[in-house]
Length: 213
Image (cartoon, rainbow, N blue to C red; front, side):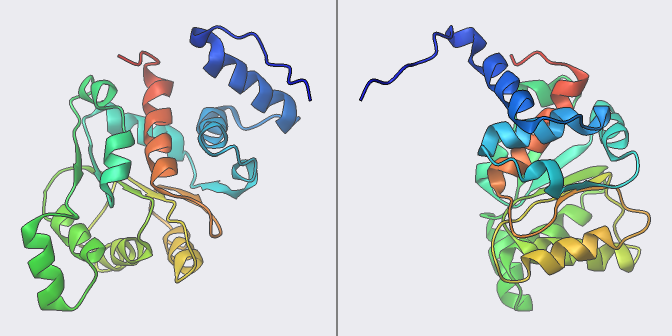
C-alpha cells in the first residue's frame, strides 16, 4: 500500500489543519464562536463540537473582557492547567490555579464528605477575585458552582463546563445552562475533557492576541 503524505512545512501544519476543518465542516459558524469551536475540533478531531458547544448570550465577548481585566483561571485538573498558555495569560495580568492536590483541599473534602473538586470550588469562591472556571473533568465541581451561584455566594466571569464522562455529567452541564444570569460555554452531552477546557481558554486569549510566545 502506498501512502501519500501532504507536503506541509512545520510552521504551516496548524494553518492546514484549520483549512481541512473548514472544508469538512462545510458551513458557516457564528463569527464570535468560530475560533473556539474550530479549536475544539482541532484539539479532538471531533466535529460534534460544532453542535455540542453551547454559549450563553455574548459569552465570548464577556469572557474576553474578563481575561483582558486579569481574571483568575481556576481549573479542576492539573492537566487543564498545564494546557493553558501561561505566557499568553500573563500578558493580561492573569494567573491559573488548580487546587486539587493541595493539602487543605484533601482535609476539607474529608471533613465535609465531598469530592476534592467540590472543595476546590469553595476555595476559589473565597479568593475574592474575578474568576473564570475551566472545568473539564469533575461534574461535582459544576454542581458546586451552581449551588454557590444560587446561594448568591459566587458570581463567576465565565463557567467553561466541559467535563467528560457518564455519572452526572450531562445533568451538571444542564444545571449551569439553566442559570439565567451566568456566562457560560458548555459542551452539552457527555463529551469534553481537560484538554477541551484548556483549549477554550486558549482560544479566547488567541482571539484577543494571537501571539503564542
